[in-house]
Every structure is written in structure tokens, then in C-alpha cells.
Length: 491
Image (cartoon, rainbow, N blue to C red):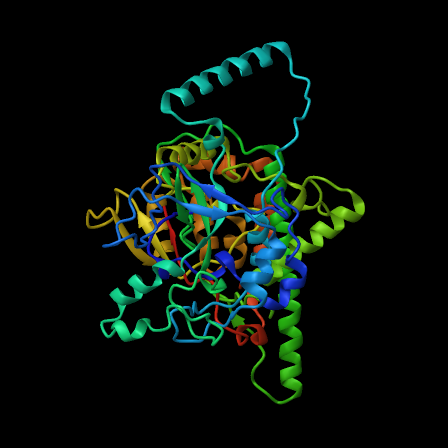
């Protein structure tokens, strides 16, 4: 994720509360249960979030304060008894449906974790000696940079209250703001209207990262989507367990496509029986079809896939993704996501180099476990764009056209099989990569889609059976607004 930015852009499902779910999310089991206290950052801390300090809003040198408490207390005090409405047209309205599953993930993310237990492993002497040498060099390098091992492990996820910066942000956005509009600053917020500056307003709570004496809010919908390179050799293969995971992904995507196809046929048959012309379904297209919490959109269907896999794993004790019935929930995700060793190393160095937090993990193209919907708009950053510009915004069709042009120029980039199978037009991008006469592109595709793995044949098979990709049934398309409204970074 990129981090930082101004308050109004840091919303949506990053911390998505629903009072109806409070019974299942109130019991925190982290180390901090039943404990409260303050967390005080370094003396040179900077909230770095656009908030106002004393006087003219300069927060440099301001100390960051926090409280550790049980999640049950947090939920009761800040959610169960507080307003949660987001009226259309209000500063709190996001235009997105609520997804309780994302709330579940965030609740787990911000919960204090116990330190992992040491795992004893037998290591050959020569390998152990090499590992110890590398560890010593790494520690020395860390000390020279003034970074502790805890800092290198990554930031701590916390909850950040954005209501404190709301008055200044809204004043800049609304020329009609005057002092009379601040009469409600001390209002408890129970009226359902936004209460600027209310520290107990659950609608302005965000997930943030605490690291190096700073608290940086997470910016949603601004993840790296794809990374293209020219002349870079991808000599190291995708790990075998990840090849199995890609197979699992293709298989589960096929299941979703079979399901939606059957539903669309049933809906069309019912419409014909009722004498209606409707029922053929609505194309999800680029970013469409996500109906949030239920209704048959892509996100809700894939969440069902993960839930079913987790349940099957608990019943059978299966591990890994090597078989069609294995559970993806049992596969450990590396710190920076999946990917071949070369791509992983590139992203790993990007995270460390960009200490501002602009890059946190790998690109969406390697998201085999929870592939997302295609967005409508993308930010492309490149030194080879037409017009000699460093970046530009493009629509989804424009991105596909640009990627095909980049293939002609010798660029290689990984592509998620979900896009190929579910989103119209991406099969053509995939085919352009596979058919390229460029040796480096062909070698790269051999890494991401090994010729002897059967992946290419499976993708072609599923694509032939479902040439239209993912089509949300008409009822789902009418359910509500789509969720993919943000911009992602392109190649």
C-alpha cells in the first residue's frame, strides 16, 4: 500500500464497521486483552498525517499517543453504542458497499500477536555456516543504518482516528465553511450527522502503520497492479508450491465461472417463462460485479471459496495446494506476497528503498490466493510513455492497449490468471505475451507459466468454456454499487 495523504481519501473498507457483526468480533485474544496503557513514540515523532498541532497545523515533533485495550472494550465503546450511518452526500459517504469479511481481516490485523515460537530445523553444516555468515552481515548492515531487527520485520498495524483532521480538511474543501459550522465539534455524534473532531466516531477510524516514530494511514485502492521490465532476465523458476497455487486458483476460478453460468441460465429461463426479456445477466467488465456483502459479485463469491476451503482443511487436515481439494488458507503468504525470486527481490528492495511507505508488498499480478476485481482507472508510471511524460492515468481498456504495445517494445510482465479467465480483453494480452518472438519475454513466461505444468492448457480449456469470463447474474448487478472505484498503479 502507499501511505500518507489527506484524510478524505483514506476511507472505505480499511476499517469497515457493522454493528450487526459485533457479537462475533468483540472478543480480542491478543496479549493486550484486559490491559490499557499509553504508547509513546520517539521524541522526534511526526504523525505525518496532515493533522493540526497547536497554532498553524504544524505537527512536526508532535508525539504520537495510543492506547492498548481489549477488543471487546474497544468494540463496545466505539462501535456498538455509536452511530455507523454514512448518508449519501455526507463527507463520510464512500459510495461503496460494506463487506464484513474485510472487517474480519482488519480486526485480526490490528490484534496484538504473540511472538512466534522458535521452530527447530535440522540444517546441513555447510548451509548453516553460510546462513550464519549472511545473518551476521545482515545484522552489521542493519546496525550501520541504525535500524533494529524489529524495524526490519515491518510496521505494526494500529487503528488511527482521523476525525481530528476533519475540520481543517473540510474547511479547505468548502468555501462556505464558517465558525458557525463548528458548533457541533463537541457533539457526541449520536444524531447520525458527522461530528467533526469526535474522537469516538467509529466512521473515521482507519487502519494505519506505526513505525519509526510515525503513524501513517493506509491508503486504500492504490496497490501496485503489475510490474513490467525490459531486458531483465527471470532465470529462477516460480517455486513449485506456488505453481500448485496457480493451478488451485485456475481450478477455483473455473468453479466460480461454472456457478455463475448455471445461475445465469436459470435466471434467463425463468425470465422467459415469465415473459420478460431480462435475465441474461450483466457483464462485470473492468471492475464491475463486486456487490460487496452478498448478491453474487466476484468478491463475495471468492470469499465463499476461501471459507469453503478453510472448512474443508479443518475437516480433512489437508495442507498445501497441490491437489484440487487442498486449501489455499493453509498456504503461508511470504512477507511481500507471492512471485518468482527475481520479482520478489525487486519488490523487497523497493520496500526497503522507499522508506516513506509508498510500497508495502508485491503486485496484484501475483495475488493467486485472493485475486481482486479489475479497477476502472490506473496510474501508469514509466519512462517510456508516449509524449515523454513520467506518468499518466488510463482507463482499463487503455491499460490493455498500452500493455500490448509494451509487449511489442520488448517488455515482459506477469499476468494474473484470474484476469485472463474472468475479465474481457485480458486473454488477448496473455496471448500476446505467449506468442511474442522476443526471447526474453518467452523465457519470462516460462517462469510464470511453466510449459510442463499444464497451466497453459488449463487456462485455454477454461477460457474456451467461458469466453465471456465472469458474468454477474442480473440480480447481483442490480444489487448495489461496485467496489473497484480506486486507482491502481500499472506497469
